[in-house]
Every structure is written in C-alpha cells, then in structure tokens.
Length: 182
Image (cartoon, rainbow, N blue to C red):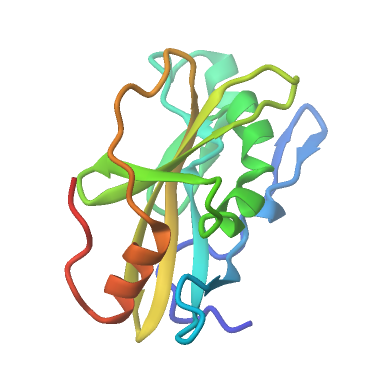
C-alpha cells in the first residue's frame, strides 16, 4: 500500500507511559472498500484511503503544566494533546466501525461544518455509550479519502440528528458533486 501522497499521519507511534506501551497501529492508514448493492444492475465499489486524527485517542486538558499532564502529552506533527485512556480503548473499534459505514445498521448523520458522523453503541466495559465518530470525505490526488478527525463517547446523548446514507455521500464524492448538507 502506497500512502506517499496522503497528507496525514499514516503510521502512529506508540504511546509509552511508565514502561507500558499503548499500541496505536490500529489507527494506521489503510484501504477500505465499500460495495454499494442498492441497485443490483449497477453495483459500485468505492475504495477509500482511511486515516485517523490525533483526537481519536487524545483530549484537551485545562492543566498543561502539571507533571502528570506533561507525562500524558502525545505529540503529532501539527499539535500536542494529552493521551486519553478511555478514547484510546474505544479507538480500537474504529477500523471495524469505519468498515461498517455502508451497512444499513450504521447510523451516518450530519455533524456540522460539512462533516459527517456515525453513532455506535459500544464500550470496552460492556456499558452502553454513544460513540461519536466525526469524519470528512474528500478526494486527494484523484483518490477517495476518509479522514476520522475525532472520536469520543457522548454520555449525554446525541440529540436530534439528520440521517444521510453513506453511499449517497460516496456517490456524490465520486461524481465530484456537492456533498449532502443538513
């Protein structure tokens, strides 16, 4: 897989704290293919390069100057934020969630600012939680791209959402048309 043209982190370095290694390779860039079978006579395969952002496993903190805060800092090319153990644990499910975007069971909705989100109920402790995955789709060097900008649990619920079909998004992107708006 050649990701030389991708303008994002393609291989995340592990986070190490007190000798414990937190493997981030599950968030390395990868390809995902989606088969749109809504029209049996005109099936379309969409092939996306998928990347993940720092916000999938880090979180802002009010206290950047304490010793503990400094130990939790994770530095990426564009910014540094504190490693967040809850987000990290949930992020392990992101590749399978992203692969499921074309499934009827996966809710894809508008997240504002031209971005899309999927809400999935999951938790590493068996507790039900809404998981909000904010992603953008675009073309980059004539390739379809999906970048997960952030992913985090929402304990207060997500409120009202406007659904949009993932294949509607993908088809408009492929045809170079404007993406659906809320």
